[in-house]
Image (tube, rainbow, N blue to C red; front, side, top):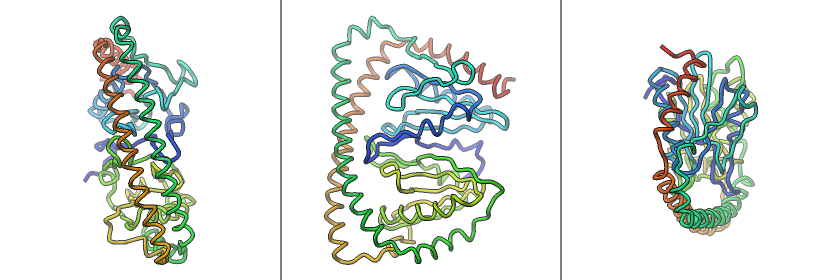
Length: 354
């Protein structure tokens, strides 16, 4: 494990498929005022947006810049954004297409559009218009079905969460939280940022290994997911009022709950891990009747989540088919020329040239 932020490329998500639909944190994470330059990539599927960002990440990682990679919540192998910074400056490149569509706020001066659709051969795409239309329609129907089942699963999850909230013993939670927080030293100032470290999509639940890579000290909280995240939310409420540099990780499925907390300067991660020895279940007085009610909801929940995963997989398959069509109509040499030009600009901003 390394604790050098410039050697590890932290990997996060900035959006989520949740019980309440698609949740997007892009405006919070990629506010134009937080960067010396913000590049917004446009162009449809298969035009090389993710590959463009991976090349930026590789280029500036090799130049010893700190690089943060933001992955797609539906396809955790595809990039949605890259943040590059050194001691003086910071830039970001993001995918500005739906469902996290972005546009310039201060065009030319602080942010700009990079159009990667310049490399398309529209004649080839026109010949495939019927197939493209069918895949787009089927992709939309699959996403609608996936979100329907996610919403149904969310109703069952909310039922279990309400039971846990009603039975949460704060006196026990306070004692347990204090045993954790007593080892945390306060800093000079408070800074809270938002990220996600897991997602739900074609692979079901998908968790990045970022906190294990960054944290020198991992504090794991076990037990049932709802119970553990209620406790972590309680801990976060205590921590956020202290002078600390914190990355807060909401649950991707339920943004009201906390999945993990990372104390940046102290390199301490407090995370949910169902296999942890320390179980949060002891903070809740669950009666046999309560347990029976939750048992039924858990089964319904699992059935709905299985269907949601299946439909997200179908939607992704339609997307990959679209990428193949558009990719075959692309001249990627044009992307390479754009990349070379933008890297020269970024070098000047970050003062890394030479």
